[in-house]
Length: 153
Image 1 (cartoon, helix red, strand yellow):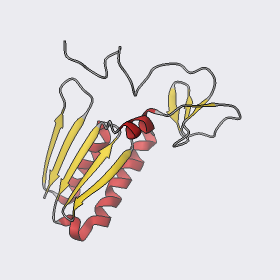
Image 2 (cartoon, rainbow, N blue to C red):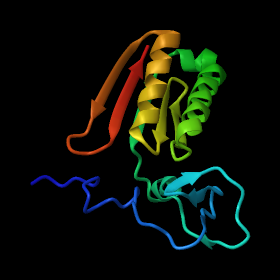
Image 3 (tube, helix red, strand yellow):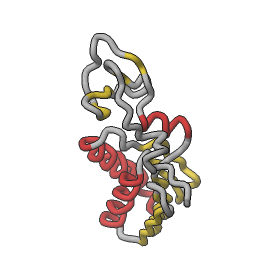
């Protein structure tokens, strides 16, 4: 049997555990309500627990890794970063745990974007292809909810 971090036995980041009382993430401020992490006002009394997205970022265990290679980064870097940020904001409407964990600039033509979940990295890659064309490769790890995306132009 292959190891799967997302099997029902092992869900280190997406726990279905019910918390007693109110819970707030001390890092990002999300509130755990009705079995979900949400953007909401902090209750008067609560305990602090890192949300799954902040845990992933802390641990460096990203669900999506998007490699960008393009000479466009020299001239349209700000525009591309805005597209990336807009996709993150859009994804957070339905799930505030979908975040960009970090962005590494490897050179003036190469960048790596790390996301907390594979859906966001895939969405960003598809948006880059729509906006700027180029080649897009999406690879999912076998038996894991993780993706590696390559966009090159």
